[in-house]
Image (cartoon, rainbow, N blue to C red; front, side, top):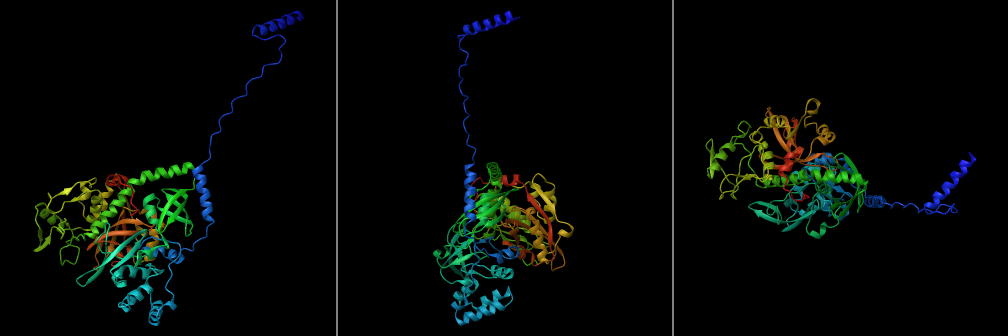
Length: 538
């Protein structure tokens, strides 16, 4: 056995020598070190940088905001036509010691009087002293108040011509500044836009507006136009985390995702500077923005169509001198026949009605449902051609399916929409949800609590008794919601003429009415209307 082990040892030594090794080389040759893998940069530079900037912004001096306005935000937006502003501080009322004795007395009487009616009383009292009236009613140039009733009466009853008689003034609404010119037509004095898409149209004044004699006076605004940023970026809810004169830290909601964001301000305009979230969440937000862009572009086009219908003062479809609703809707078929035949007028029950307006534009009568349906179609490029062209409709990107277009009654619209689940989601209000508008606090609270159920582009029906003790229905188009609370405040409807109004403006004449149903058009409709252009601010 020992001899076998010795022979094996010799064999192995010779074998190693045959592989190029000497029997004397018993130390193994050194081997190369393994290659170290390259270090991959995993740091999220964009996200980390934004988080650092947010931390810096959080250390900036906090602005006081406008806490009294915020406490009454929904009560004001539900009553007065308004812009849903965010204020870095509340505009200040004029100091009494800067007023003349007569103006001090007027201010003291105004302060003691009941909110609402005192606004009209002050306008009448100072109708011949517009500078003093402006000093008492406007706060640093702003249409601003903490009182909902004052806001309502100011927006509903006070005209720019009550406050100014200068040949030109400047109006700031949101982030836009417009020059207005004073014009007189007969006994009526008004201010009109001098340029842009609203050129020559009369200007009104609403809560949150700022008015001045010179453009330079509108520098350093106290408000921030969060609504325009929401239109552009696609978030529908905002929680302000840190408010300052400069950057704003806010939690923005895109769909179901809330993200910490840094907003930078340039005057009243806001810019979404960055999103302080991880890369995966930012990608989710970007995907949501891309998915919803067609709807936002379509809503911008629909709002422009509403502006056009309002400016053309489309007639309500009710025969002249008719007081009740029994003959509503009878004029449009007669108008259509006359229009297609190229006639200038049509007759109904012995009365003549024009087919075209004074500018030669087609002028079809509208009931409330027509107004909503016309707004969608006109936004999609579908409308009647004017006098002088081959009469008929230009068919654009979007038209309603026939059974929807032919419906002109509110109840019928709800029923037909429910039969098209591919186009609409219909939600009916029942039981305790049917809160009469007379209970304003409960009505507004219901809308606040169910804000996610009513979106821009929705059609809302109200239903209930009017003063004639008959049940009436009405269709309302929802143009805008508040980016802070989600409250549906920007409404448009057709009753006597198309108007942009509020819940108060529409429902106060019949406070026994309540919500009946909500029709939510689905994305397929907005994708058809989408003009494909960049989303406009407003």
